[in-house]
Image (cartoon, rainbow, N blue to C red; front, side):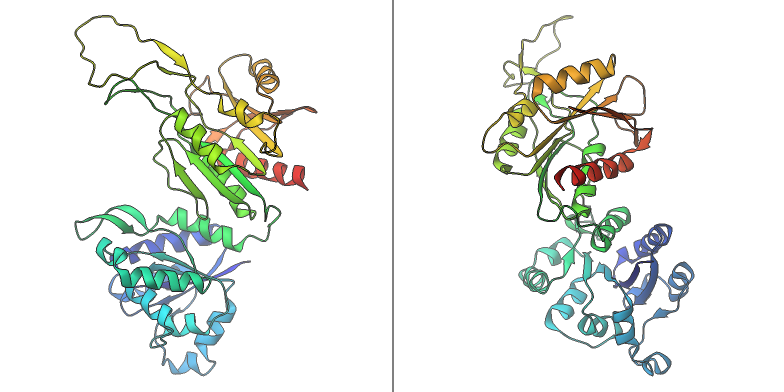
Length: 393
């Protein structure tokens, strides 16, 4: 059972550490915790002890613990040390090599991988001192997840919010994963919809949430791949360790994909709009007429362009076919027309697929069809990542 030592820093976001512990335990991880003096103002040792099912460290000079050199034992026990929230003060002390409490002493005494999830006021996060500490810790081998952008407890808005516990859990999984079958492989993933402007306030788009593409990007990254995620507009947070490039239109997505080349694998899950208005109006269109018509022109076929033979063609190109009828026949036709290696076909005619958390897919390649049962999108992503790893082996 993988072992995680959680260090809880002193900040309002410390309350989220309790949810993180719950998720880690549910995921099958063994968890112990160190609660800083500041953290104890926001959560109690009893709460952490109840959730971790283990005594909580706090005092560097606890005679019972330090008879066994507790700060050394804890740091050696863990497979991963997670600091959440990582306050500006904790980051500064770790970057400077200070050891004036149990948390900082444990960090200094460890050769275990460390993952920090920063949380602080936006001005503190952007301060040159914090940026220097971030650079120093990164150079020392510390990994980071977040912070997110959003409203702060102090009433300000900006970067500094603690990453959500499920996102931190994904980062923990990635760093604990023993499966590194895709290490050294560069993968391009596209996800989400595109938005094609009609005027400054309206656009043509579709119901794609981007969930399947984001899940695939996360699954590939956990196997050691370097993942570039080109994403249309979504409400999703970038998976840990993934480089996200945000785009709006199909033209922008194509340009971002080309800029990412060369890659070893391309997984094209994005629901790219097939058409766009021939010309976007410079001003908001008025609703004076009961009927109107808009001339549409075809968008670039990104999947077909990346599948063309040439020196920059990926070794493996995987397309997605979202269909509402004749699923297999239409997907087979798309495989032949686009020139990709695999097509992952899914029926989106019903409810709960686009925007939902589950999917039923059939993978089609030159060798035939492989129908998968109804799975969560995360499970589909894991299966597809396994299939890609085997194909490249």
